[in-house]
Amino acid sequence: MTGWFADGLLVPAIALAALGWVVPRLLARIWPEGVLALLALAFAAAVAMTGVAMGFFLLLYLWQGVPLADLAAAGWGPLLRQLARLGLISALLWAPLLLLSVMGLPRRWRTRTW
Image: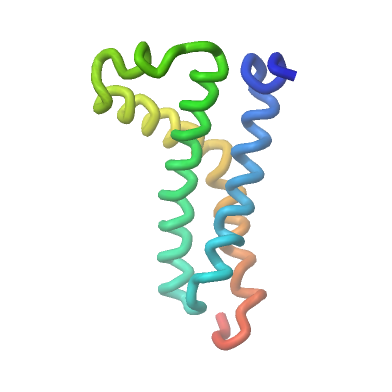
């Protein structure tokens, strides 16, 4: 199992893509309805997914056996920049599904219409 999860790309890619679909749906439960609110939700979901991806890559590093002290040896700033870079690059996986998920949200609106 560790080979598929940590060494391979298939399971991490599927997990990030699935989270790209789920995060906007979860945020929509507490978010107000409306066009401007939908744009704000898309932005908040993208920021949240970048943070989730950063945590995901940090966990992958730790899963591979890299100590946190070694990761942060140059300081927390370079580590956070590296994780943010990886999180933004991973948008190639999760952003299309995030956009599709956000585009489908107006169908569930009760008080507003598109």
